[in-house]
Length: 447
Ligand code: NDP
Image 1: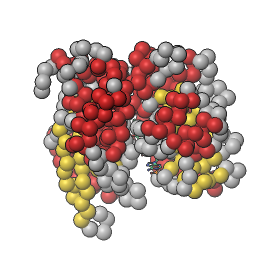
Image 2: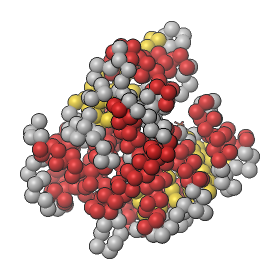
Image 3: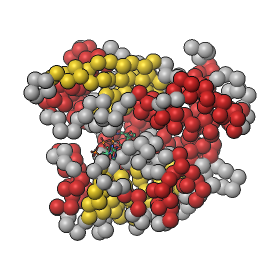
Image 4: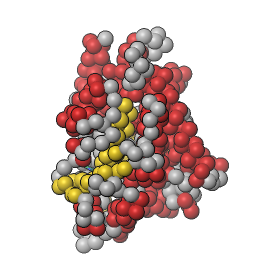
């Protein structure tokens, strides 16, 4: 089996060897899905996984815009349309200086499996730009979004490709992107998700990824007859996903000890309660400030410059910032300090070696493609509401989100339960996500 996996990876490497994040995502999937393919005749010999590794379409384009000083800036925009076997392409847009083809292809590849797990009819895609929103004025953000959409609008549509937010793209950016799409196409349609609730957005969409990450962890804990109550929780990030993961964990009775950004992490031994979280939300979403400012307001807390929060003793860890933010050493520290549950809010935050540590220690570990699928699932619910020209209540959407997270959890058990009873959620998510897409691809022929 090892040889088969290596032979497959060699083939993918020939074309993509320089794309490290993409290869990392493919390796993780290949190691769990190839043994399944080999044992299932209908998939064997059809090169389905190889086809899934090649994007259906890659769009790269120039984005020119003028900054507040009148200087002309040039950025690069992308959209990866990875797989449309089970529905139109769906996946976020990331605006961050590190954005490149490898990062977007890894995100698009993961998205295909994630969207399949939600059971909603959505293919996978991802896009973005190397534009850095930090330090830009409101007008510069708007002009960039408009310039970006001027090209992107040719490639997307409510039945073709429906982007959403990701790092650096929140409700403000979705507003500017949507406004430009509407102007260029002269139609009010559900072409983007994460829209404001008064103009086609869904209630609970902003909260959905963070809430879903906690719901998934809750499902894992309840198998062990445990819960969030009185647990110490360590969270990385302080953006959209981290904020709502914190909110849900606090509401379930947990004590949230840390949050972070790319400059370091804050540690509050008394716990970040709802009032303190409100301060963080205002700081990050309105003032666009840095997490270090928390300490000025709450002097009993600490700011650890340039550090990640994983050495903080905790019961539950929720990595909610970015890819590869938790490595083997971090994983060892978490486990040796008593952490027994990790639920990924970010995409691929744990390195392969970190995941091995979690698996060897037999702690509960949920990979992002399963545990953070609540965001895209609620985007799917937003698309349904747009098509029906209807608007569901907060409770209705939240119930549907909980159901979806439970179903994903159960699919992971179906394909990931080991002989000793341990649940390998990585294996479970990869195979369950693969099966639905593979069946559709087989039915649709060699296209
Ligand atoms: P935001 O832009 O709202 O927040 C990102 C947070 O992560 C910020 O606190 C940011 O800090 C921090 N961060 C970003 N890059 C780094 C880095 N290199 N090192 C340390 N910290 C970093 O993004 P989201 O909360 O939306 O996304 C977070 C993660 O969740 C991403 O992996 C994303 O792909 C994933 N995700 C998001 C979904 C969504 O619905 N938004 C859905 C599913 C997954 P700083 O401000 O300093 O940059």
